[in-house]
Image (cartoon, rainbow, N blue to C red; front, side, top):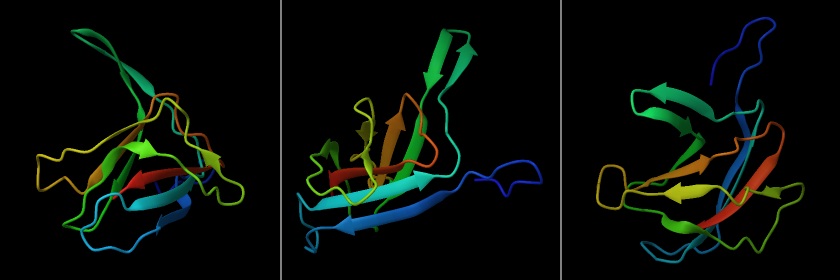
Length: 126
């Protein structure tokens, strides 16, 4: 995010909520509902490299507490909070379970970008 300046908008995530459905220490299949909204759109970019053209998706990074990890793929969202929209079908998630330093980090890639003023929701197991 930037601090912005006169005439320039700032990108901020608002209404961000992480809501676990089960409070079970070190449990698998602990569905967690995550909602967020961006104040400005985040577009994917195309970069030209020596190997050709590379598409870079918009990304959302969510960190769990140390000792926890995420389980991809995204789960079914059975509870839709008011005024929310499911993340697009082309969103992919990844977690590096082999790296103890980063296994608590969830990366969501949005190939079509993140729209502004859309309150997204998704469910993932923690």
